[in-house]
Length: 158
Picture 1 (cartoon, rainbow, N blue to C red):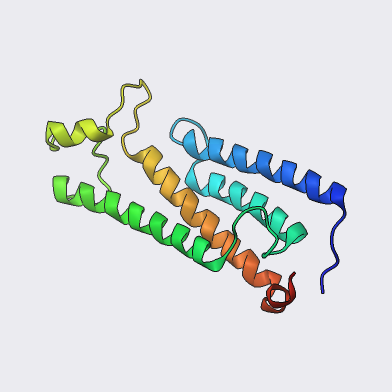
Picture 2 (tube, rainbow, N blue to C red):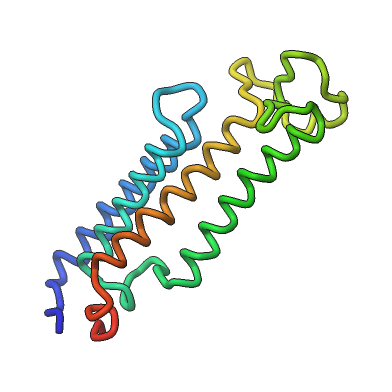
């Protein structure tokens, strides 16, 4: 049985994890114009969740780290990535074609305007793909950490 961590550790780890998760979200959302992106931001968010996993365990975690939550997160991210790829395939003939910028002028205007936003750094669907990749990496790394945490610890965690 895992001993209960001190109150100072519980409070400080939660605050540190929230800051790390916030920085990970910032890396994901700015990944199309700055170094970084979905993988780096997803790894940062996962490290914040893993930090809380070490201190709180799975059952008492302030974030919902249940199997069903992680499973839904991973499935939604994979489905979103494939869906954006198929939209590009069906509208242009190329999988993951950037329909928001449309450099070859082959996308109908009404479809292009859905993903085109008025910004000088317009990246089309790249920010959306960064979000899906970040969620996928987050779910994968968190799942690995939960498995490394051990099934015995999960069963005995109170």
